[in-house]
Length: 215
Image (cartoon, rainbow, N blue to C red):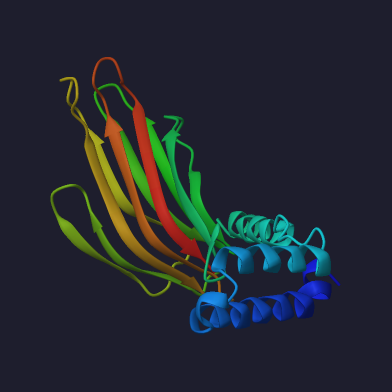
């Protein structure tokens, strides 16, 4: 039990005594104790009845705040229990698929191919489970298309953009908003984008971003 809890009844008694004394000062006339005297007496009583009484530093409150912050940090990669894929990544021009987000048999990946006169970037969706699907929309930067694969057998290219410009600060980009699922309950939902750059200084550069959740 804290010191505050042990001395609380005494403190209440002292406060009541102070109130009664002040009331007497207000209505008792010229012979009544002055408020200054009442305050001095009340202070003496409180010090005598509850020596050293104070409200210490709220360590438990600090601990509770720290615990809450720690929990938030631990859940930073989750939204309503779902894992989050949220990042940006330079995609090497090595003609290999680089996963952006994965769940169970499902993978959404980016691919970069550097040719002699072009740099091409892709967003692919694949699954190792035959009974999988993907739906949504995609764009190559100019045209929006629907995505509908009720049976995703292996791999499907959702976005394909090609840059053949040699002018600095140009490039080609595209993206997709996808909902990918599998019969085992795995899922990926969110947005994906990719950019290809074939300018002289950045030839063969591809860049991808993802903001999605998995289940």
